[in-house]
Image (cartoon, rainbow, N blue to C red; front, side):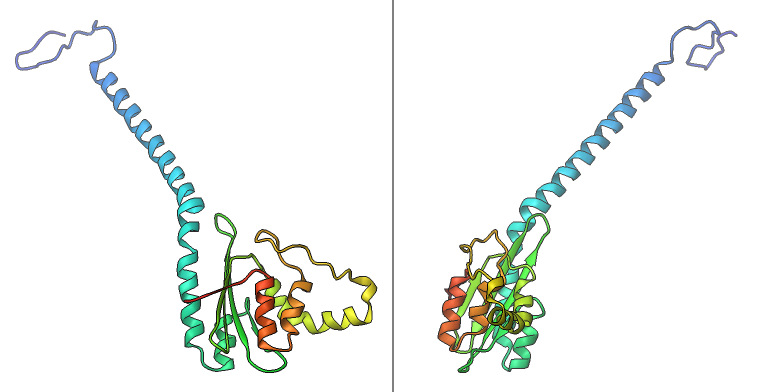
Length: 200
C-alpha cells in the first residue's frame, strides 16, 4: 500500500505496535470502572449511615408528637382504645378513672421504643423502655395470671428484676398496674415500670 493524497494516516502494512486509540479506550474504561466502584461504595456507606444513625435519631420525635396528638384528640373510652391501638393498653382502676397508654417501637437499624400515657386527670407520662408485645399481652392476660398466682403460688417467685430499658418486662411488673384500686396507685406503678411524668 502506498500513501495517497488527502489521507492523513499511515497505511503501510508493516506498521508495528497497537494503534494509539487502543490505549485511550483502555484508560477511559478504567475511569468508568473506578467511578462505578466508587459510586457503589458511597451508596452502601450512605445507606448504612442513614439506616443505623440518621433514621434512628429522627424516629422518636415524630412518633411522640403523633401519640400526643392522638391521645389529646380522643374524648371517649372507645376513641381512647382506638388511639392506643393493639400494642398499647387502656387501664381502668377499680375506683374509677383511666390511663391510656400508646406504645410504638421499631427494630430498623436498632431497637427503639416510645410510650406515651395520658390519664383521666390530664397527667402525661412517657417511657423509652422496650415493652415489645408484653404491654398488649399483659392487658389481655392479667386476669388469668392473677388467678393462677392465687391458685398455684408455688409456681411463682414473685421476684421482679430491676427495671432496665434494655430488658423486656415480665408479667409481674404489669399486674399491679392493671389491678390498681385507684388512679393514684396506677400512676405510681407507671413510674415503677419506667415511665416519667412530663408536660406535652
